[in-house]
Image 1 (cartoon, helix red, strand yellow):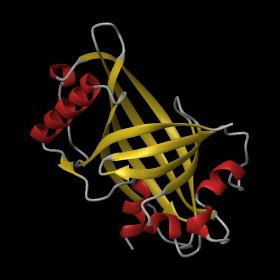
Image 2 (tube, helix red, strand yellow):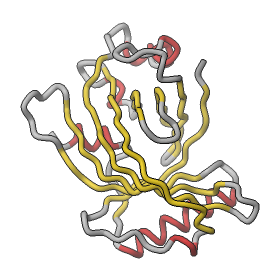
Image 3 (cartoon, helix red, strand yellow):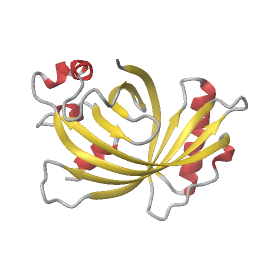
Length: 201
C-alpha cells in the first residue's frame, strides 16, 4: 500500500570544503543524524521519466527507506509517493508503475543508475517540538548503469526540505536556505540528483 505527501525543498551545490553554518537562526536545532543511503533509479531506455521531471527509485538506509516516486507539482514542490521495500527489488511496484503508465507508454522500467550518499541530517523544530525543516548535507557517489566502465561521478549537495506545508515550516526552510547562501552554497541548476548525473554526460 502506497502513501503520498507534498515535498517542498531547495537544493544547493557546495564545494567539498564547505562548512555548514549555524542553522539556529532559522529554528531550534533538534538533532543531527548521519545516514548511509543506497538508491537505485528506474526509467525507460529513452529516459522518458527524467524528461518529464519525474524520478522513481528504490532506496535503503535512512528514516524513509522504500520506493519513492516523485511527480512535479510546481517549482520546488513535488508529490512524493511511497511504497514499502518489500514490494519488489528489480521490478517496480505495480501501483507506482501505473501512476507513470501514460509516460512510459508500455516501455519497460529498468535500473539506470545507482547513488550512494553519505548524509548528515540536521532537524529544525518549533517550540512544541514539531519538525519545521530538515537540512541534508549530502556527499554523493553516482554511477550510470548504461555506461559500463565509466568512472563514478562525485559531488556535494545540500537539500532543505520543509517539514510540512504550514507557513511556519515553509518560513523556517526559507531562512535555512538564506543561511546556506550567505555561507557560500549556490542554488542547484538541477531539480534532482539523477538529473544532475544524467546531465553530466
